[in-house]
Length: 131
Image (cartoon, rainbow, N blue to C red):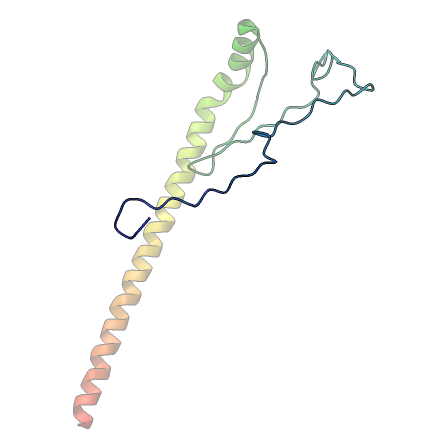
């Protein structure tokens, strides 16, 4: 195909040995036996969770894996409902302390900035006297 006469296509070469799209061969395995019990356990001793958080500091506790709503409700009442108000008060106290620390740090930075400006003004005044 000459330049400017349509899209380029690769040159095709005949392959007389081509037998079509390759397919894997099915080979018998005399040692194979299907086991219906794989993955079935009478009980689990552990469970793993991977929790992705947007904000750090989230606490996960009192986890339950069940198919019984009454059991889940009983655990909720015995754990979460019993502790939620105290945990909320503790979180608010920590947040207040962090806010006070941040405010104090901001004031300290502001004071440092004012001192730097005063020092620069003094330095500039000294330079004018020298010139």
